[in-house]
Length: 130
Image (tube, rainbow, N blue to C red; front, side, top):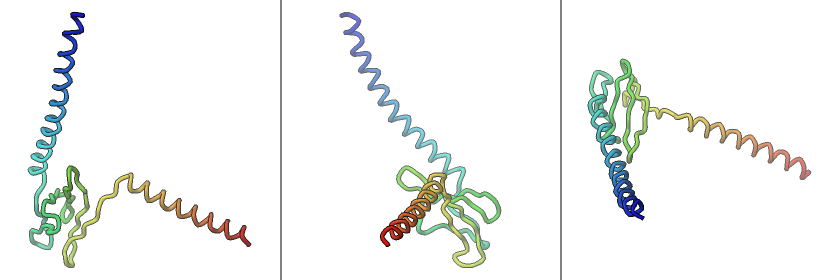
């Protein structure tokens, strides 16, 4: 009985501390990531002998990769879209291409297989109807 009366308050204190720590940990990590992002990237990129930025993505950050090549990190909600930015000689003097994830490739392959299966089923059904 005595150990149970001590256990309950300690459990609640521990549980509340865990929740508070979890919330604060996310905030600290988010702040640290944002801080590092500001110093590891730029808000402009250099193409066609001038500094430029993406007006449609005002909060985009750019990481220099090589001469005329950047990674564009475009924030949305609590995530980033990563794109390849390559300088070109014609207006708008850059090409922005979204980097595909493994998940995107897998979905694309599944969609192609589903289209082939649908086509095969339609062919088989049309042959059976005749």
